Amino acid sequence: MAIHGALFEQYAEQQASEPFTRQNAKMLKIVLGRGPVWAKAGAMVAYQGDLRFENKGSGGLGRLLKQAATGEGVPLMKCSGQGELFVADQATDVQVLYLENDMISVNGRNILAFDDRIDWDIHRVQARGAIMTGDLYNVSLRGTGYVAVTTRGEPVALDVGSAPTFGDPQAVVMWTSGVRMDVRVDTGGLGSMLRGGSGETLQMAFGGQGHVLVQPSENMQPHHSSGGGGNRGGGLLDNMFGN
Image (cartoon, rainbow, N blue to C red; front, side, top):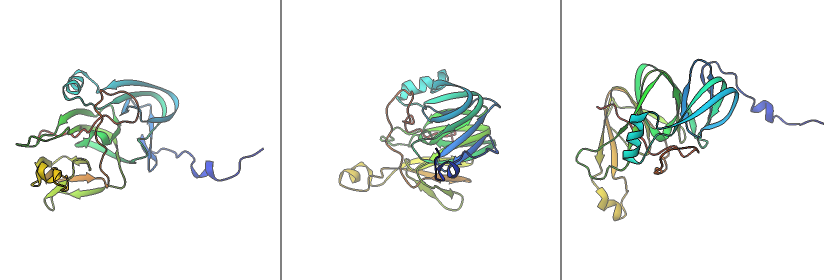
């Protein structure tokens, strides 16, 4: 008896040269053994070895209090042990970067995994003088280590230092340190949306020096949940550095 075809050769597991390695465009392979990593709750699709998973919800008392106050959270699980972990999030594209004593601000729906040695927190994005800001939250990541984010399609990295830059809050994935962000209300406003306008009532305005990563598809509307398993991703989380 035999199985014929190139399936197992074409999709054979890729050898990892780094702790965070893209297995393919939509799956991340994490080699555990140097220390724990954080991953989006429910993102595990497979693992090999002796691994342990702890559902931490929003992680830490301060973050849990923020979650209770806002009705949103960043559902994360702490992964530790020895082995290889494969994570993915609804077949979205995986992007890997390495922070070296630096920081980024990431839409919480786009967080996939990051090193435990990276410090993180949740912040609410607020529009100056605006009543309708929606539930906009981001996750700030600071320090040194690997970070994996997801994008709905292939993203574009915009250099905000070259020209005034604006983005749809549902399409902005992350921005780098040195970038200033403010939320503006579209001049069309709510009335424009109700009258059949574009509906783009909120815009993120960027300045300073650095990059903004934008995906070609908007994130789904947030689920108001206190966290837990599944691939639901934990709310629209958009984080600022207090700029």
